[in-house]
Image 1 (cartoon, rainbow, N blue to C red):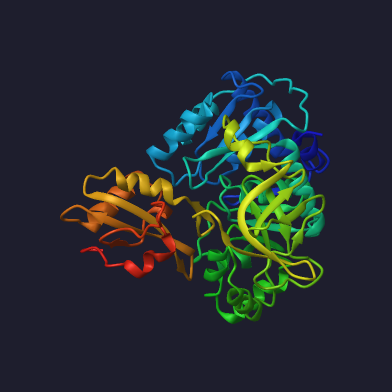
Image 2: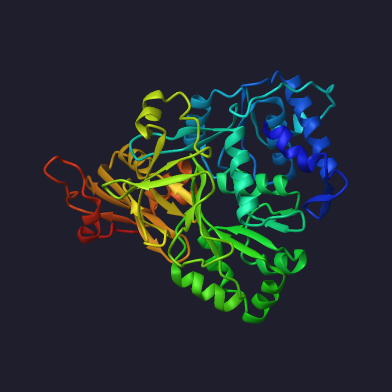
Length: 465
């Protein structure tokens, strides 16, 4: 079964039921199906066919849903691009993915300017690629993870079953659809379960309470930074929101145990924390019925196996695991061992089976649910003439979980404000170092590798930072 057939359980079987609220208007599932058919015809008229890559650079909006479903129907490969990315980052994805079209707001208007004749959809196997979602490691530039129709379907089926999502639920979705959390969990679970969803352009903590009270959702997917912001809601209002809610889920970054406890006291709900990756979607989850243990990510989901090697690293195997990295055969081979995928995360397993993540073997920084790869920032900083050496690490932050901080060996005078301005021109906002620290030298081991865990003991803030 491919995703077109899977999603027809809602798009066709529930065609008369309300599906989506967007920008003050409600759409039925049949309308969503018809919109995506028109979008598929428009793309086909532009020459898009099975296997072609379609890059999408759009903020959350109903047309982004149309494009995703159109790609699913045509067998094209959906390539979401983070809207916070700048020219440098976008150029890499375009060069690597080789898309036949890139859909921006301007291109979207051109696509929708005239009707195109309907098209016949190809017969697709579940192993056909559905999306190419860019992730990265600390040893190179971002890589495209090939996610298949089966990957999406298995992930959605697992979550709908294990989290008891039904057509009676009301999902408030504020996660960006360019991220696998919003796309693979939010969008796919909505279509699999056939529930009613209100899509927001973004999470605005100042308007969050009003959105909850107006829509009265039963289901909310968020990242820890969102839950920290929701704790600012007054106790009485929080309790009112909690009265109609069924399930709050957190992921994309570790949820501090204190946030879970504070949230439970304020809203009357225990957040369900789970663990996933771009390459695997969801791997483990705290139980819906059972103890949601603070600081843990629960148990492997159905059909998914987990093991911890002698180094304490977590490996995953199952039908949720991606097909490999786009045009990166060597990287793909290095990531697998007899079907097991190397996550790069360190973990422990309790005697009763709960998994707890203990950090990463890589230097990955997760800030507000976004992945930040220090190597990319370091390479940009090293391009600047006044910087001799650069190392970037994550520093704990109450709201975002972590924020990047840069340690620099500089040549002569250094203006931190000017450097920040240059970073803003070339890097997404969440990648900009929150502070620049001047050091005489970077701590290294005998092999010359920077010992990042020692950087905080060598700091001396740059003038103007």
